[in-house]
Image (cartoon, rainbow, N blue to C red; front, side):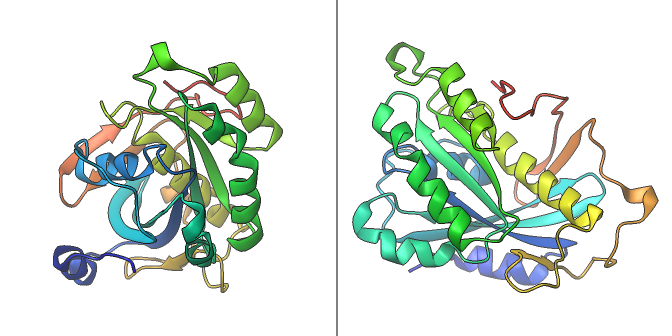
Length: 245
């Protein structure tokens, strides 16, 4: 069962935002998915992390250009015995963070299965970001950056490496996916009013982008209602195999 704290429930009622986006975090067990998500939402490393049982829920609100966006984040278990449960949460997802462990080749070898499931069950316009986690353990690396970058390019994915321990690049996959989704809305490719899109309008939405509020490719501004305001600049580094670390 998803875990939603009283704080999150109360915040859901108080916050205003332009768009609500559904994200799933997927990949093999032990890749650090929960730690990556915890660092993104809490700005700290998750000590004594245990394997996720089923699915856990969290959220965070960020600013992308002129738009305030709430990310609904579903952290799914990587163990095979939970697969029938977790796959049901893929439905209607607008974004997927696909995680492997750079120190464990088996977690990379199985990526195709995870990607195939996500693309079969989620939104037809699913945006997927490939994340190589545990970049702080370079001396134990089993998957080279160039190999993962090539696989990402072949599968039309954005790719970057992160360290959920030190927080390196943990913001980037979520912000990149959110920006890509908003650009699809702006271009008319994605319709938030269509069932299964993984996107819905919030109270602040104007139902269309005006020319004055077009999303800037030069920078992304991010604000957390819990942690104050931070700004992250992501300049021209997110091509299909561009290195982001």
